Image 1 (cartoon, rainbow, N blue to C red):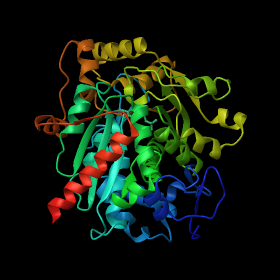
Image 2 (cartoon, rainbow, N blue to C red):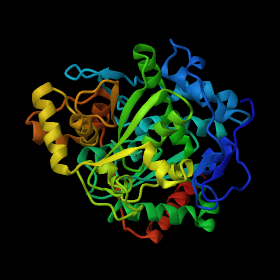
Image 3 (tube, rainbow, N blue to C red):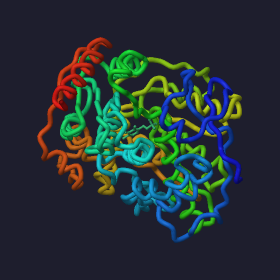
Length: 443
Ligand SMILES: *Cc1c(COP(=O)(O)O)cnc(C)c1O
């Protein structure tokens, strides 16, 4: 256990990298995703029963950071990142069921947790004296705001967000454009796939990189995935102490980052029981777990837009964890939930129980609704606050959704985004022009 943990790419067993190198790099050089060479084992007894989420995170992640440049910094990183509550709230009308609320951070979606942890790591890995770093983010809505909030006003870092114009909710668009200072939003005349391709093209352009140092903060970074394990460990340990039973979990799923974190926590030996994936009408995962061959496909737009993914990038890590299909299919179940069912679920729970859910969370609530009597504890994972998706939720329930204070503060600020053509060249010349202006201003 005191051995340092090494990381490798899902695509080649090249030499082990350390976590600080993995976090700085994002993607492995061969285009694969970084994974730990083995998942460390953790006993429930290793955790302080009275510890905070940040304390649980520190104990859980310690073996992942051992002997790295960030090892001594880990407690500080965890306390900086996990500075908002992540409650496991019992559902009064359903014995044994709870909601794990991940949306109490600055941008009102669970991506705050990974983004804040990554930013806390970057602050320690990059001395301010280095040349300013530009972090590029392609977003279908929630990632951009979480990354912007996490890096806002951080010296030595600039964030450039690309989003598909007209394809994010009005409040999401406002959030992306309201930061200012070191954050710039670009509304791209194209799709999310265009945004992702433009970011990749810029990152792979060596000449551009020497003029404008670039990095990314997309969801495949282990610096975002590992911290997501913390809330599953914390919730499962608290349920274990209370009920002496493992916690079963239903996770709204798109790119599989959130659910994979839960799978890894169970692999580490912590008391997580069944894991159910709730997907929207993008059925790549539910078809696979029903027995079809894995077939990535183009994404289709749904009410749960942050889960509009036809080729979940973290499937490659799941495959690495369980290489054989029959073994992998025993680990998880997946359900595809269409837009009509999402609407009906939101309406029924608001009407019958006074419970408001965002469209993503509603997919998981539907999976719970379908189960009969439950004897073991189940948690539905709530990935965003319903007020973030007011344009979907409010017409359905016929009243306004109260806005949490952090989101309200963002909505009060003015917002602006610059238009950009959906071409690789357009982004590259925008980045060069921006860097030249800054140099001229500097002197
Ligand atoms: C990103 C997101 C998801 C999907 O999470 P993955 O890790 O991509 O599976 C679900 N709900 C909301 C609100 C999100 O922002």
